[in-house]
Each structure stands twice: as structure tokens, then as C-alpha cells.
Image 1 (cartoon, rainbow, N blue to C red):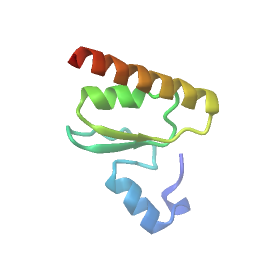
Image 2 (cartoon, helix red, strand yellow; image 1 turned 135 degrees about the vertical axis):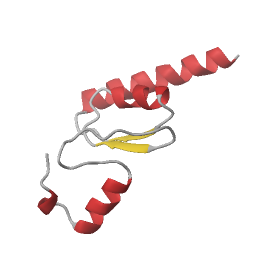
Image 3 (cartoon, helix red, strand yellow; image 1 turned 90 degrees about the vertical axis):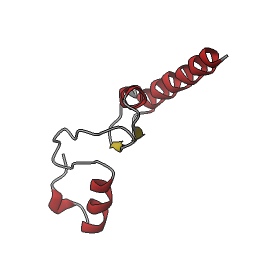
Image 4 (cartoon, rainbow, N blue to C red; image 1 turned 90 degrees about the horizontal axis):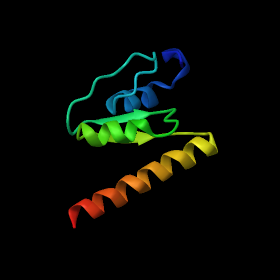
Length: 85
């Protein structure tokens, strides 16, 4: 995890405003909140966000993990469209 001294103060303030904690502590959100997952992996954060009425933004550098997250999101979107019909 990044040390707060390693992050520019203005950037740190912006990240904290959307729920990012550079110390690695778990940040609890409430419905309609926004969260940032800087290492979102396969995208589990997006399923959790949907279930808790939270908006999530994820960042992932690994192409395989990104592809898996994208596939999961696309599948969830199709499932929601079919359920609405």
C-alpha cells in the first residue's frame, strides 16, 4: 500500500473523497456511495457494488483480470436486461 507521504496532497484528498484509503484499511460504504478499487482483479467489487446500491470504479493493470472483470460485467448486464423483459 502507498504511504500517504508518497501521494500528492491534492490527489490524496480526491481519492479519499471517493472512498480510497491508501493505508489499506477497509472502507465501509453506504448505499449511493462511490468506491474506488485500485486493484480490482476479476471485478468482485462491481457485484458487491450492485448488491449494495453503490457506484464502483475499478483499476486493473493485468489484462487477463481485466478481461475476466469485463466478461462478468457484460454477463451481468445481459442477465439484468433479460430479467426486465
